[in-house]
Length: 85
Image 1 (cartoon, rainbow, N blue to C red):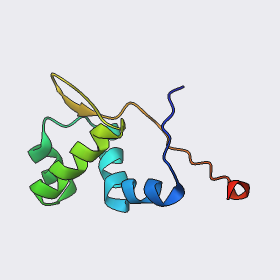
Image 2: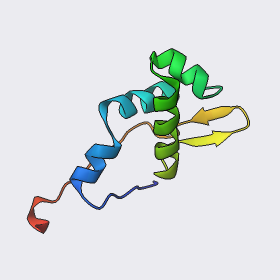
Image 3: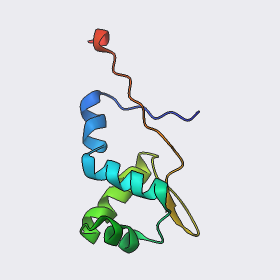
Image 4: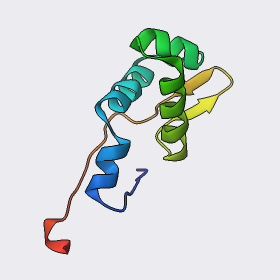
């Protein structure tokens, strides 16, 4: 099982915004041919989708092959340790 860690909950929530989660869900459902295709499907501005895809790739949440971008995860689970403060 692959894991991704964030420094804190605030950072995680910033990276996994509502629109970025929708983007990840759309890519999980159906691989995108490119950013323009994904922006059209999400009815969002190309530049904003481009920036989100770039950020999510850096975070390790989006992969890409010769057929397009995709998400290999079925689920994102968060554990927040309240006692660690």
